[in-house]
Structure formats: C-alpha cells, structure tokens
Length: 497
Image (cartoon, rainbow, N blue to C red; front, side, top):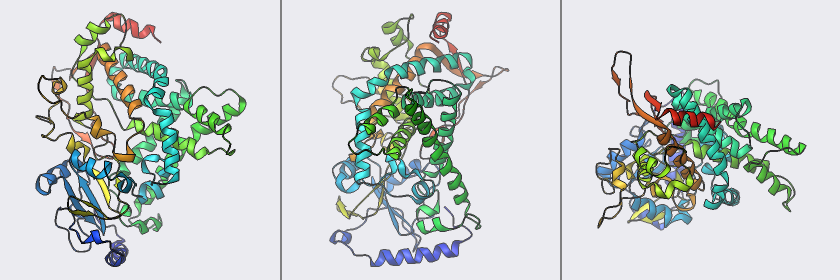
C-alpha cells in the first residue's frame, strides 16, 4: 500500500483519526494487551507490512511467529487475524453476539454500491430480514427444488466441453452463472441469459479486486471517498464509478425484465417470481424491490466464489455404481464415497475465498487474555486452517485419500467447517453450493478423461499451479486435454440436448 499524490491531505486525516482514537472512551477491557503481531510504526501502524497480494500465505507465515490470534493496525484501525479453527470458533461462534457485524468498507459499500448484498450488510433489522428470506429459499430441503435446473445446466455444460474442450474454463464459469440465472429469473439458455451472465461476471470482477483488505487506502481513511474523481491519485474513484454501474445493472436489468413479464402474467417459475408472489400477498402491501434484487444478486455472487478444480479421476467407482448408459445423479451420491473424498479435497486444497468475508467487533471483548478492540476488523485465514499440519498431513499436496476412513483413526477436519463462515454469518447457500458443485464435478469425471496438454512438438505443458489473488481466488489460466471417455458417452451427451 502506498500513499497517493494527495498524501499530505491523507496524513492530516490520519492525524485527526489518531487523536480521535487516543481520546475515545475506553472500556476496562482496553487495559488488556492486544494480541501479538508485527511491530507497528508510529501513526501509520503496519501499513508497510500489509501484503497486497496472496495475503493468506503471508498471514500463515506470520502465525508461525506470532500465534493463531494476531493484531495489526493500519492508520489507527485494528485488524485481528485468526489462523486456527479453535480461534475462529472461540471468537466468532461463541462470541457471535459481539463479532457478527460487518465492517463498512468505503470502496465496496459506499463507492461501489454493494450495500444491498447481505455478505457486506451490518447487523440489524435489514440483515435479519434478508437472512430469513435466504434461509427460506436455501435450506437443504428447499435446495432440492432446484435439482432440475442443475441437471439441465450440467448436461449443457458437458455438451459445450465436448464441442470445444479448449475453452473449458469459460464453459465452467458461463454455465455456473447460466444455471444461477435460470434458477433466479427462469431464463433459459439464449442471448438474454448470456447478457445477464456477462454483466454479472463484470460486476463480480470488480468486487473481487476491491475485496482485498488493504487494496484501497479509502477503506482505512473513509474521508477520501469525498475526493473528486479528477484529482490526481483519485483513480479509485473512476474504478468505483464504473464498478457501481456494473453492480446495479447486474441486479436491476434481470429483475425489471421479469417484473414486466409478471405484470403481463407470463413470468416463468423462478426464485424471483416466488419472491414477487410472496410480497404481493404480504399484508405490508408495498413491494420491497431492493430486497428481491439484493437476494437474487447475492445468490449469484455466492455461487461464483466457488469454481470447480480439476482433480484425480474417480471413473472406476463411478462406472461400478452408475455404469456407462447414464450419467451420475444426486441419488448416486451416497454410493460414491471416493468421489466424496475428491470433492472434500477440492474444497480443502484451495478455498475459493481464502480469507472469508471480514467480521467486525461491536464492542471490546476479551479472548485468551487479550483485548479484541471495538471496531476491529476480524479476518479468518481459511486457507491457513485448511493447510494446517495439525489437521492434515502434507497439506500442500492434493490427496483425496486423506479423507478415506481409517480404522482407529480420527477423521481429518471436514473442509466445510472452515469454508462457509462462522457464527451468525454462516453462508445460507452452503447446501445449494455443495449440491451444484458436486453434480458438476462428478459428471465431468464420468464423461471425460482429463490430462496434461501436449503441444505439436510433443512437449508436455505443465499447469503453473498458481492462483489469482483477490477476495475470490481461482487458478491462473492453464491448458489441458479433455476427451470423451467413449464414443457412446459422446453420443449420449448429444442426445440429451
């Protein structure tokens, strides 16, 4: 992180913030020591220590020196870094009444306008209303209502991979988004749904970049959000304006189109149609259109944060259970234990959101003899937990066998326990996401052989194994070879169109 050209103004603001921090009313708990961490500099704190890329790896290294509960400060604001499941549960589960708030990041919420998204919403009546609606739509039994759309979308994904395997990465993202658009708005494959998906991908791309804590100075000095866009060094304002427009279009255009169809009496079945029906029948009368657009937008984002990775083959088990005359379905899942091991390892090996979504401490609280100060931003290093040798042997290796039950041995930590949030912020769409990703992965393995790419000279092209940094992470683009496992399977995929 570096100071922009208007650094003099920024430093003046820092001075005022430090004075405010120094003279604020302190609770008795504030006399306790803060958790350990890298030594801060006067006034600016650890501003030079905060990594701007792949932060979870740096924080995992720090934990080896300072422990699993660390503190850093940036321009007078406290960040608490948790690097163990015990610490995350102890602070975010057991003290959830105090630690379930969200920090209000100026870039995402104020400038980019993502305050409609429940992931970034502070505690209060609005959050509880959204949360209740999400639970009604996404509890395990309700998620089964979307199985038909998941099956249809997965078959379409397989056909596109069959026809153009070199574009597998695009197909995975496009069809994941397309399935969500079908479920949320009832929109079948076609140009309009493609338009919805394209707008959503643009909006989520901006969110991913802005979601890195420490990426933009305005998150630590909120007054900078008033700096005009034309001022030198205010390039973040231009980005925010563009990203804000993308975010609004992502939720407004599909909703308005479906509302128009609803008014004409020909709206297709969908999550949004259900929400409109519920509000039409509500005694409150007026429709909460922001709720509807916000809920559907957040569901799409929640699914986009998880991208299926390539993994070792499990065709032998799939063939033994499913055979070669059909593709796997949800009813086969209990009979595919090794596929479940692969799926668990995919979730563990590189979590889609390595640092989760930050929490905010609403008042001073004691934990392990330390003071977790009011207003502190709390980050859970989910990547660090899922690569902790306390839970997993050789954690850097992709090894599904670690999840095979062993007589007399305790099972390793289920990655889902560290991947979907804590306390009152546990992801309400976790069951939906689990079902959708499992179906896509098992069908890809059933239908295709996946191997390393070999160029025209016979040279094997190795994937880099590196990941893009951001709030949401994904592999750097790589090449691979994808071929149908048999001509009969290829014909089956064609016939399901």
